[in-house]
Image (cartoon, rainbow, N blue to C red):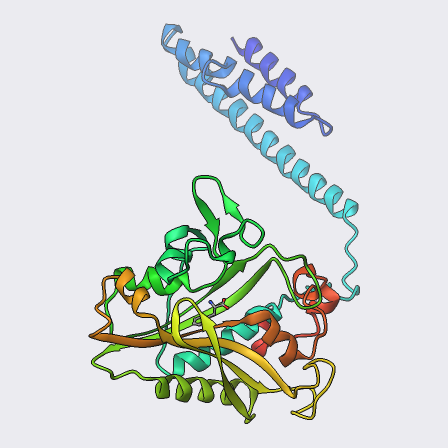
Length: 348
Ligand code: PHE
């Protein structure tokens, strides 16, 4: 028995040489110390031995066991050290190199303009509601009092989608969507994307943004004077103290209708090619909400009145930022975008 044990010891230690691989070490551990390993088996058979022999064999087994265990532990520590050294040698780390500059994102100039407009309108008491870009004829046209044969309904102007749907051509659908689920008194603005079949050009884009706004209450509390007051105040906060004028206009969904002009920001009213020598630029459409629009959302026009307005964001942004080509907003060339650092460096 003693011989057998010494044999186990000799073989194990020979295999656990200084150059043993991790696999070789594991193989020895399993063969000698494992649950059905050589030493375990001998311990199990201990009771079959002569009583006098048992303590001696037991002692020897324990001795070999701890010898093999500590040899394995030493080899493993050694292996880990060599592995660490190897990986450190591989990755050459030069702590004197300058750090890498992480480029910082910015808020898109169009988004900045939208947020500035919403901030001003928000201070004036308007709530923000987002409504859908994919619409049906009712919410984009019919409820807004467009005649069945109105040219805007033509496939030349509007992107139609399968299933009687379309991409909204203006944010005025927001008036209908909001009034279908909420009752006045209300002062709401709806920002969002709009789509028209225009070729991209200096002054137009097939996808653009508008901000719609409306204010409605009962019993004649909201009048054309409120419309003029609110929009003049908005123009003065957003464009700076600039002369404004309301020019009468036409929209199917307002009556009376008007457009708001401000003094051309480029020539300050003197006349230049951009304002076609008129000294004025149009910034938004507005008017008193047409009785048929109120009826479409089941409000009695004898009881409820209000005004609405809608303004394009990109054209305004061009003027305000002094840019001469709308396509720059959609090309997303970082060299262009980087010229409009946002407040707080883009962190809001
Ligand atoms: N929807 C109009 C447009 O796209 C703007 C508008 C909105 C006019 C609300 C009057 C009232 O031009």
